[in-house]
Image (tube, rainbow, N blue to C red; front, side, top):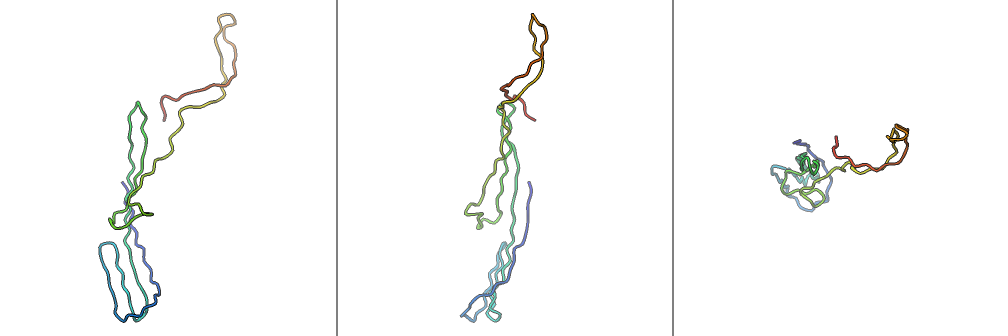
Length: 124
């Protein structure tokens, strides 16, 4: 498991008619509205959690998954609080050229070239 922690902060100019300063704070966000300088200062603590795991067995093949989620329960990544990425699996079926020798009882061993279809039973 990997945890990525970062702070996103900025100060932006805002158009304010009020003369009252506002402050909002919680574990993740601090926001200060200053009417004298007409600015909004914010600081957001981002914590992403990245978990990599495998599912499957020797018969069906193990597949690796990666879950990335955000620790703040009120925050969403593109309207999704948690998403999972599955890497592309290696293809087991393939077509390829081969060269080698074949055994013929009359001619014994003879060189052979051809096209073959193969299926990988064990992957590394």
